[in-house]
Image (tube, rainbow, N blue to C red; front, side, top):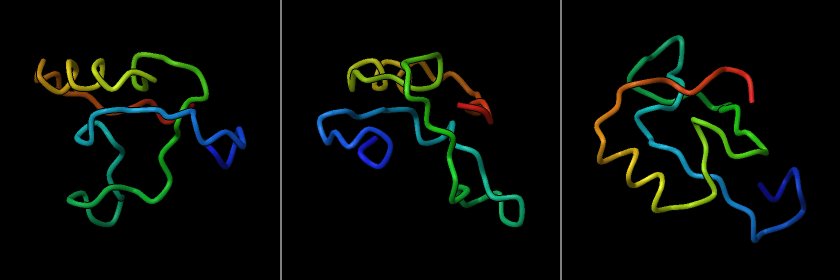
Amino acid sequence: MEPCTKDWSEFRFTVSNWLISRKDNESQIDTYQPVSLEVNDDWTDELITAIDWLNSGMKKTIKSEA
């Protein structure tokens, strides 16, 4: 979040398998990922929430707009 907020204390977490894959190689994540400045269904500011999402086994892809 630091490039947007200039605040190194702000982080966003998600599940790595939810990240958008590259169009030319779906086994790799895309360089650009739309990280939301606000907490939402794809991004959280609580690590434990992201761990809960991971443990839930939910399959999804983050939204393409932040």
